Length: 126
Image 1: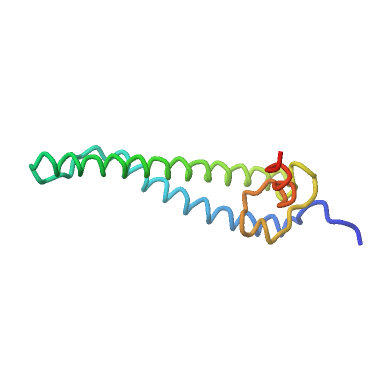
Image 2: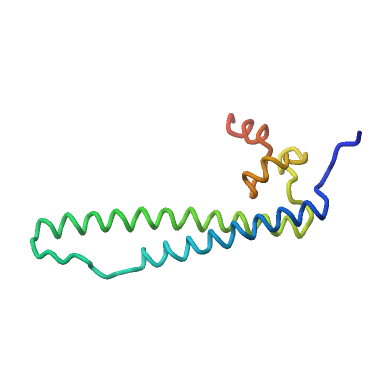
């Protein structure tokens, strides 16, 4: 039996639907995180200086954490958008290191994957 070199148009469409759903969810999450990070209001109502300083410190830490989560979400969005480009080019699911087809089970779990597990492990060892 001949080894499959690319996914069929029907399979690519299945991946497109999956990726577009994940992309919509990620964009919603990103918008929410940006909204929280960009909120400049100080919600501290206690006038005690010690409490206010502690609360402001916690607020700053929370904004930093949300900012990091927003950046990771934005990176994820970019990876998903790149996967859609690969689908349009009919190169989706082809390992960029080996040229072999990435297993469908892996792409269903990590739809923006560009490497087989084996290729990723080899790169991690270098």
